[in-house]
Length: 139
Image (cartoon, rainbow, N blue to C red; front, top):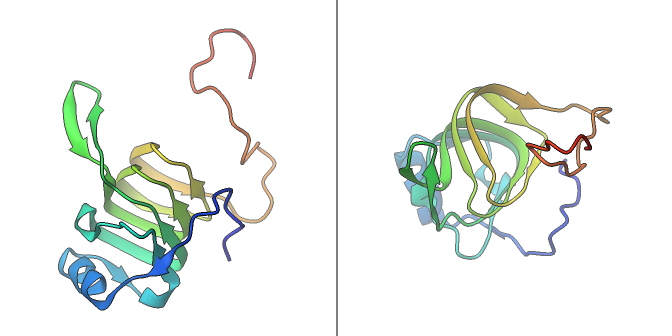
C-alpha cells in the first residue's frame, strides 16, 4: 500500500479508452483499477510500461531538455513500476528491472537505471530532501 502523499491532489480511475490506449502502447497491468491518475492525465506519454500494486500518476505536459540539448517529452518509457506515486512532469526512461515503493516528486528525471526500490522502513534517509550536488560540505 502507498504511504500518504504530501499532495492533497485528487486522483481518478483510468477511463476505458485510456486503458485501451495504454495497452496499444505496450503497457500492462494485472488490475487497471489500481492505477489512478490526475484529471488532465495524457496516456500517450506512457509506453512499454508495466504496473503492479497501487499506482498514482501525475500529468506529463512538459518537454524537458536532456544533457546535450536533446528535447524529450516527460512521461514513462520502458519501465516497471510497483506501488509508486509519480509526480507531474517526471521523466522515467529505460529502467532495466523496476522501481518499487517510491513517491517520485514532480520534475524528477530517472534514466538508464537497473533497480530503484525500498522495502519496509529505510535507514538511508528516504524522504529527506538533499542537494544533489552540494559543494558546500553539508547535506
